[in-house]
Length: 138
View (cartoon, rainbow, N blue to C red):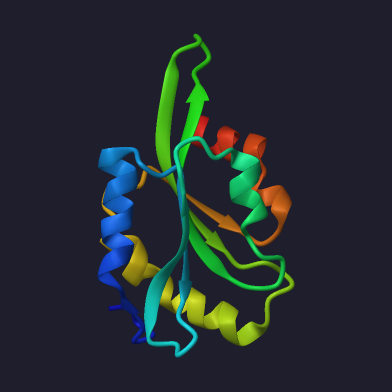
């Protein structure tokens, strides 16, 4: 449970394991339920979804969390992938949701074992492919 009292639904972890172990999803988007009691899966996309498809799912005026199976090439041309966790809190979101998402993040994040990189995004430039790629390669 998060410090906010918001609980992580079992489906959040199950869907993450499908992405991590089964490679059946390219990304997962999570949100706090309308009754503010649980964290739930909003959407998950098949392995052929593009990064642009993923970014298009992030609302300009509301918070979300997401996990993306990020494929990239190393400097020597090798294929790699890392699981990236996103905390999306755009400038256009209201203060109350921003505070609730911030205080609930650890509950979700700690239940998702195997995340390699964490990205905090407040605008689309911070979650742009090249920006995230630079962060992963560090």
